[in-house]
Amino acid sequence: MSGTPGAGVLEAQIDQWRGFVSRRRAIAASDVEEMEDHLREQIADLEAGGLDHEEAFLVAVKRMGSLDEVSREFAREHSHRLWKQLVLVPEAGDGGGGLARWRDLGTALAFALGAGLALKLLFTFVNGDMALVRNLAFTVLPFLAGWFAWKRRVTWRVCAAVAALALVPALAVNLYPFEATAGPFPAPGMTAVLAFTHAPVLLWLLVGVLHAGGAWKSHDRRMDFVRFTGELVVYLALIMLGSMVLVGLTFGVLGLVGIDLEPFLEDWLLPFGLPGALLVGAWLVEAKKSVVENIAPVLTRVFTPLAVVMLLADLVALLVNGPLTTADRELLILMDAVLVLVLFLLLYSVSARDRLAPAGVFDWLQLVLVGAALAVDAVALTAMLTRIAEFGFTANKTAALGLNLVLLVHLAWSAWLMAGFVRGKRPFGAVERWQTVYLPVYAAWTGLVVLAFPPLFAFA
Image: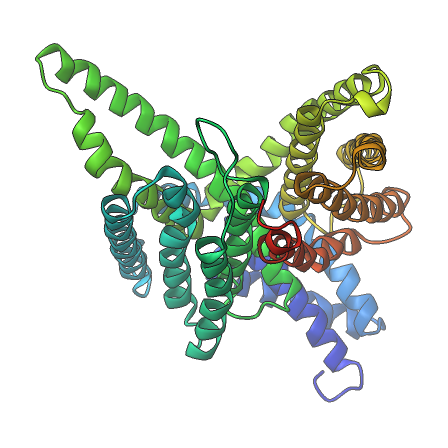
């Protein structure tokens, strides 16, 4: 087979199929090899019957059935494997896999301890709440980045480049001469607030470069980072809820016997607990993907219809709020927050979807979600332009306007591609690829807000 002209194409197709199956976390590597042997046998039989390489491959894959069904069947037959992974019990004869998981956990805890010590030093030697806020991400996220660099075996050249890029916003937020508002209680100016809130986003996207092992041009690696981000949010929410219950009960019990834990909470639990939750959550996402990938499709199907209802309500609120010039600034800011939330939901939905599955009812619902978001974005954008025309440009108005334009392009092209997919005109891969292609735009925009907006608006 390897000597025929179409053999290279066939091997590329099999490689793509193997990569897709390998991402189904219920299927182990040995099972993938067994399935591949079965696939190759079927292809050989079909070719012997007169089919060419491509026809034989397509028919063989079709005969093997839906990969989702295969995954569910493997999950049922090998459920003990998933449960053992969940409770950290290594498989017998796993070739050191259990030891590798413990080593990953130990390294993650070591980075978490380092982040806790760094945060403790920040709380001890840095004065002022705003100084703490603007340096929080620059203190904690480098340790997560370091863990990814160790885990992915990223080259020193890539690590140095990422560190140099991260140093630029860190210096900007600390050295720019931001002005404070006048009055008895001075507060940071708008350019400072914009820089402090956008810098962590830029830093998180730089962490994504190390999560991708330095292969930041790979669309699959970018989508893996999107998936990781969504799954990490799920784990952090669970960890935070559980921690709140445990801490609350502990405070209540010890308070009854006259022990005050508040100094311990402020001095030790918060500095070490926050980065610890982040690093442990990241380790859980990496080690327990089989569990979360079962949750992700459920979450998207629950929250997508709720988000559609929310967007329609927001659209009505904007339209009945009177003339667009009277639209409250806080309302427009909240609309931006809603659109960003919808964007996260869209990205998480795309990352959790089987790219080879045909279009269904949920895909139409996703299209309605994006269409409603576009309508809200258009109204909010019109309101912002109207306010700017009447009152002029300010830092926050310009930032809101720019974010709306960035979101408008992203959502509009997503809607166009999704419409083509649900109508059977293009594959879902085009929708998925657009999400990863557009990610650097957000990095560029956040960098612009952090670095250029303060001097453009006189640091006010």
